[in-house]
Every structure is written in C-alpha cells, then in structure tokens.
Amino acid sequence: MAVFRREAGADLRDGSVVPEGDGEVPKDIKMAAYTHGQPSSLGDTKVRRPMIIKIIEKKFEYLRQEKTLNIYGTVAFGTTAGFSGMLANFIFRRCFQVKHDALKTYASLTTLPFLSTIVAYKLFVTDALYSGNISKENCVLRSSLTGIICGVLYPTALAFSKNGRLAVRYHTVPLPPKGRVLLYWIMRCQTEVKAMVIPLVFQMLFGVFNGLQHYAIFESILEKTVYED
Image 1 (cartoon, one colour):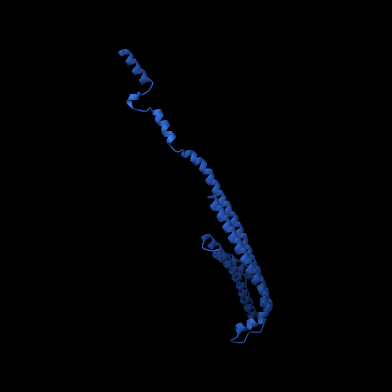
Image 2 (tube, rainbow, N blue to C red):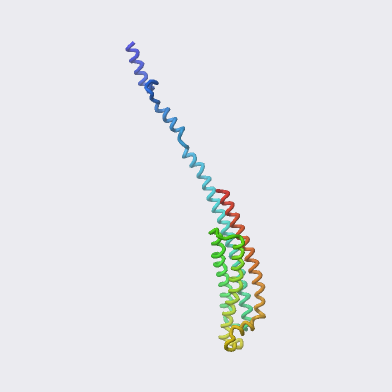
C-alpha cells in the first residue's frame, strides 16, 4: 500500500496536476482567464484606424472644396473691381483730355483695385467666418461694403488723382482758379462721373451674392464635418 501511494504521488507530479486540496489553480487556466478578461486593444486599433483615416480624408476634401470655391468667388470679386478701375480711368482720361501714360495708368487702375478687394475680402469676410464671430447678415454687409469701397470708390478716387495730375502736368485742360481747385475739378467731371453708378450697383449686388454664397458654403461644410464626427 505504501508503494502504491508513492507511485500515485509520482504520477501526479509527473503530469503537472495539482491536487484539489492544495487550493491552487493550474497556470493554463489562469492564463486563459486573464486573456479572456482583457480588452482586445489590438483589434480595436485595427478597427478604429481606417475610420479615423476616412474621417480625416473627408475633412480634407471638404476644406479643399471650400477653399476652391472661396478662391473662385474672391478672384471674381476682385476682377469686377479691376474692370471698374478700367472704366474709371477711361472716364477721367476722357474728361481731362489726357493722352499720356495710358499703359501706366490702366495697369495701376486695374491691379490696385483687384488686389485691394481680395485682401479686404479675406480680412473682413473670410477670416471672420473662420473665427465664427460673424452672422449671415454681417457677412453680406461686409461683402457688399468691400465691393462698394474697394471696387468703386477707391478706383474712382485713384483715377481722379492720377489723371488730374497728368492734366496739370501736360496742361491738357485750363488750370483751376486759386481757392476752388477741388470744386473746379468736380464740376468739370460731374457729368462723366455719373457713369460710375453702373459699377456701383453691380459691385453692391455682386457683393451681396458673394457674401450669401460664401456663408452658405461655409455653413454646409461645417455641418458635414460635425455630422461625420
């Protein structure tokens, strides 16, 4: 009997089986239980990574579309301001009977209103939309004011100044009397300046349209981005 018990104990030790009385759990069972209780971090990472990449790609696509549309609208706005400058230069050159430096005046009257409109629109409309501190009505108002000031008033004043100096330099028109210089030039050009009402109305309407379109595009892209998140 002692020999039998000794052999049984040896068999148990060889088989790596722990008796129930000792209160220990086999290592294989412990490892299985620990693995089952752990969260599958590697699997979650594999699932989440394509979703995150897809969301980022969609955001970049939305921003690319919004940037393209914004560039087209702003460039078109600046182009109309450039044409307004060309019209103002033509009117004042004809009014002052100036025939000198035509290329120089037309180049400056086209380029400067174009650039000033783009810069002003970006500062007062585009950047304000990105900051989120602008309403729809405020966006339209800023856009129309940019068109009126940078697209009509600024080119008109610039054309008046440049061509007035050329008229004085080359004596193409009689010089004004002392003390009434500004009144003299205004009275001389008042008939021709009325033609600038056409670009004034056009720039105001185009500014309203551009502001509405820009705000709608920005709002739709913002809603899509929030929905994707």
